[in-house]
Image (cartoon, rainbow, N blue to C red; front, side, top):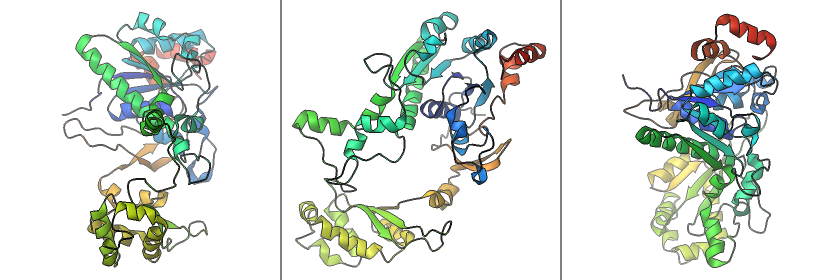
Length: 414
């Protein structure tokens, strides 16, 4: 029977918040055994973030946020105020293939788990720090959170309407982006180890990962001496390009009418001609004011008014179906309701349902890839805090049940 690609790989997971847990989520999806080290004395902040089932926060184990990004992992609860807890962590490190953290530079060293110490007990380990700014440089010890890194990456300078100030991207994009980059680096290092037997340390900067996606903005300045202009939903090389309002949802949500929007993009004159036919105005394809990209850009306000007039009296599904049938890129500006009920995602079984000890079965986003030879799956729901402490301590780390109880009585296991 085929096994997942990272089956047999064990990850000692010191991460918290989002970037690090998103990284180890990818590894868990690929079959790695991810053992997350937690503590009740300072629980991960995401255990206290909404959404909560029925909108009520009454447990550290019910956060939809935490439970989404920690699927398939195990939770080992250690209190590092006690030396015995550090000894348990060392045993886990010794028996792991990967050690990962996303603290600021130097934090893990202060805890006693820096790479120079780790490789003494596990020379072949792959260790990675997903810090905000990397281990070196004048910013290395700065505090980093995703909302601040989005503007720092340059993304906010590119986002916004003409004549308006920079805008946030809508969420902490730098965090999951860093997680994906980190997972890629880890897998590459494991591949290197499989060929050479050598472990290594990976110094990764979340800031640099975010900048890596925005090189054209930097190049515009370095090559041409100018900053790209913010221009809302428009694009310098495509028109129409934007979001257009459709008829709202027929039902209200919490007594609020929900607007519906559609994204429409024409990459060239041929697509524009097909769109013109689809909206019942074929003459626009040859109209001198719209026939070419240059003309459409010059008359973009009028162009968008024409498209908006057509979409405003139609539902999103009709607009998308009609334009896609004509070979024009169009898609709903999807909200949570739209996505959670989408028939395409349902047929592909993207959403998963796993039993959770405190919230039961809830819909969660699953694995966005399918592998024919090494199938992956979400093994389990996210763990409750400390759910696997006894299992890991007595099974993997070699403690007896009596020793575990003694450590728990001392407070080393919280």
